[in-house]
Image 1 (cartoon, rainbow, N blue to C red):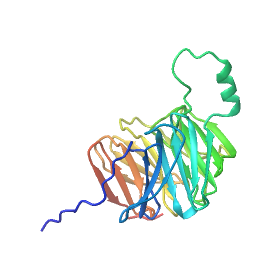
Image 2 (cartoon, rainbow, N blue to C red):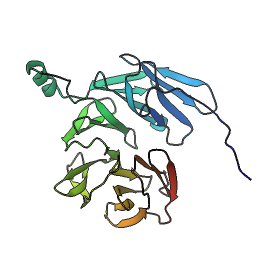
Image 3 (cartoon, one colour):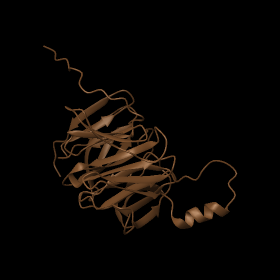
Image 4 (cartoon, rainbow, N blue to C red):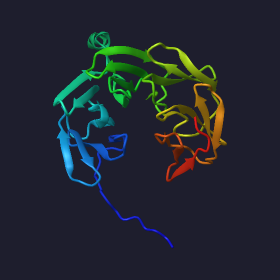
Length: 273
């Protein structure tokens, strides 16, 4: 006997990256118009948050109603936007430092724009810090209201995003000199390093964190290799023969989702942390 899923909520979205689920999966935030809309699965739109700019300019989103914070990357204006809906406040700040903006003002540019547009954005588990990565590989850390804490420029790798570890550490990935390293952005300390091997995947590596720990996942020809964070021990190989486009880990660390171009497969991880 087969089971057919009934269609539920259907939303038009501006872009795939402009969608974020709450940690419990009950609500979601999507880019809509010039801002962000918040909704639950079962009910109508709860709230619309306005932003500066034109339609369809909201990029990456992070949604943490449990800590009262929503963060978005505004790519055209090269800014970070944050809302605290419960307090009715909004903050915005530039991805570039004051020194960079001043230098750009007096330096002739022959073509294009600075590579300051935000890609990934994230919120620390306690909600007190915000992280983002720019198109040029610069990873930045701020307070939740936009006060700068630290920026670190790494070799540009658009397909490898940073992530917040369960203890609040902002971790970024660096590929250089035949090694793939996970780095604490604030202290610049190398937390884990493995040999970098050839990969043909769209996402060659990812930091996958759950509530208690995580993995450095590396896409290789034989599949996705999971290295325990931060011992580096090889915990499992997920045998995916096709190019990997995205990877994600469940909050309890027991299921990994691996997306290829046309399919998403869920794999049970029999071993815990």
